[in-house]
Amino acid sequence: MTWKVEFDNRSRKELRKLDPETQKRLLHWISENLAGEINPRDYGTSLKGRFRGLWRYRVGDYRIVCQIKDEDILIVILRIAHRKDVYDR
Image 1 (cartoon, rainbow, N blue to C red):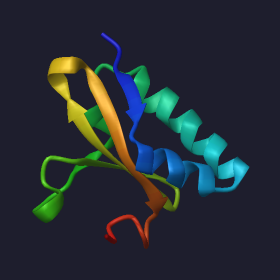
Image 2 (image 1 turned 120 degrees about the horizontal axis):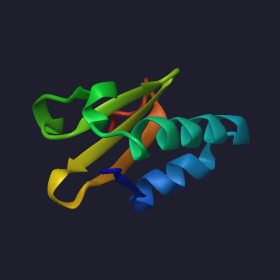
Image 3 (image 1 turned 90 degrees about the horizontal axis):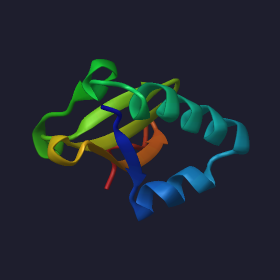
C-alpha cells in the first residue's frame, strides 16, 4: 500500500517560488518519505489548536503541512514554507 501525494494550488505556488535547489530537496524528501511509505505519520507531527487534524513534516528549515486522508490513501500538501512563515495566515 503506497500513498498518493497531491499538492493543492497554494502549496504548488509556494514550491515554485523557492530556489531550484530547495525545490529539488523538498520534492526528493516527499517522494522518499511520504509517497513510498506504509505509514506517513512516522515522519511527522500532528498539529494542535487551529491546525488540528493536519500533519507537519520538517525538512531542514522548511515545513510541509499536510492533510492525511486514510480512506483514499492520499496525502494532500497544503503548505510548503520556511519555518518562520508556515503558520501565518
